[in-house]
Amino acid sequence: DQVYQTDKQLLDEYILNETGKIYTGNRKQINGKKWNFGQFEENILDCAMCLLDRYKLSWTVRGDPVKVTRKLSAITNSKDDEGVLVGKWSGSYDDGKSPLHWA
Image 1 (spheres, rainbow, N blue to C red):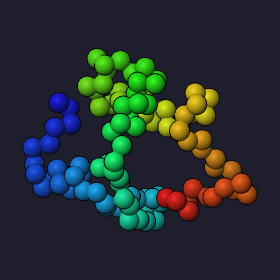
Image 2 (image 1 turned 30 degrees about the vertical axis):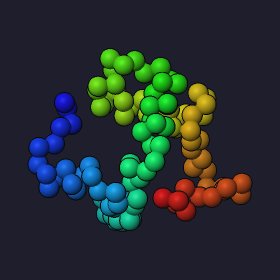
Image 3 (image 1 turned 120 degrees about the vertical axis):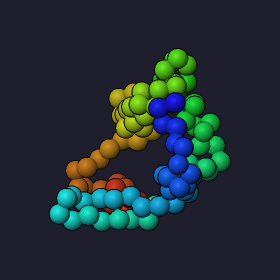
């Protein structure tokens, strides 16, 4: 498995932590924000599998973490393919909230 982690300390830090930090900014100004990753929330696995089924990712490819990640990224950021999210980065958010509000 390409992502198998033998080091328990790293496994706890990078995989099993429910919360942590995400980093934003650039190389001159890095900001850490507390984040709830939510990977253990109820129905998360079912939702991910439903998306992979809906967008026809074959079972033979689902063992490749790179291909699964790329597919989920395309699905969630896809306006044209009835995806989950539509990015709006114009700076005008009269009909909603700035992405910075929830990130």
